[in-house]
Image 1: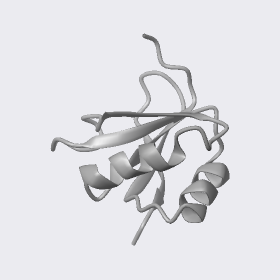
Image 2: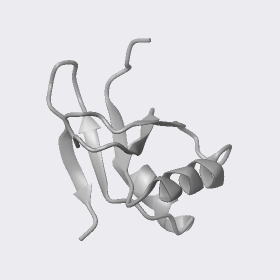
Image 3: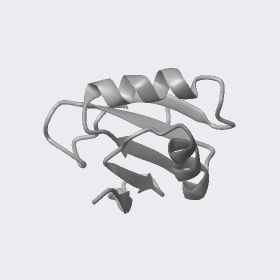
Length: 91
């Protein structure tokens, strides 16, 4: 499966947060959200992230805030073979 660019990858404090996000946002978002392994260029440890297509950063942050969902970081994958860009990080 080829990736459609641009897309975002959201990392979470735990797998529990990722699963909660998927279940709460299923059918609520106007964009595609699916759980994926955390890409190696983001973290070498095991984990689950959310890949989000067809969305803007403000939409993602708004939906997470409205549903009281926690996340660690949001990365933008803008083009193939380009490193992800950190666009938001919870302090």
